Image 1 (tube, rainbow, N blue to C red):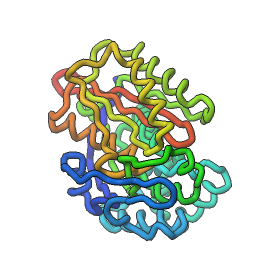
Image 2 (cartoon, one colour):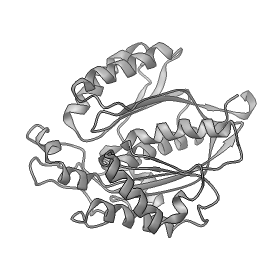
Image 3 (tube, rainbow, N blue to C red):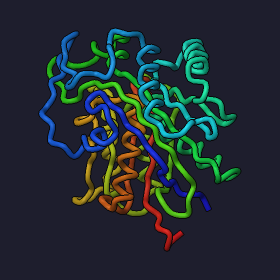
Length: 318
């Protein structure tokens, strides 16, 4: 039987709340609405953690430094799954960044099973599946997932992302973020029923891709969903695609189903957003705020998409 995921440790730093305690409280706070303007002028809510004018590697390294200084234990003895922005999809750019990381932070990728996932918010669910597989061979591993991103920089580097937005105001703002989660295998804890990821970008078929993914989820489900974590990525065109695709889940949605839009409070966190939502989902089930089945769906700016259905398995039923 597949092992369950038990949380051992976690840290979360985001531009809107640069400490773990307040970062995890953000979804429960009634923050003032944010204005995100078209063109080059928009509000990013609170100040970012670092200077948005710096290059992407400089920003990522600053975030990594802030995280590593807060950890109470070294990372050299366990695998580290590093979840990177989609902007690192170019093989040459990714290789160069990985070399710099190995030089500046050798402990991150020292373990032979450490890996890099440059698939943005979808990386978290993909890495979760990899961890599950690794436990079949060695359940003593306690791997870390570290997700890092600075979407504000990505939008500055990719003017077409701004150009694709309709003119006017948007409720999602951009924020730097780094989230670290350490998992342990256990007989009880968070478990997933289904975990599907599509890593082939399909720019011209984004809506069809989400329709297919949610249709697959609907076919596999046997009971209603109690909560859905939706991919708030700040892109109006992508939001329309998953909103339309949600209709495929209709047979499993009830009046009691809750819808989680965490980015409206935390800001769009890019790669860190996928792991942040997973951590929030875990804590909600662990603290018995949620029960039953929860679906987490992710969709990146480049067309990557993923979804997983989770439940909490107690020791009595394991």
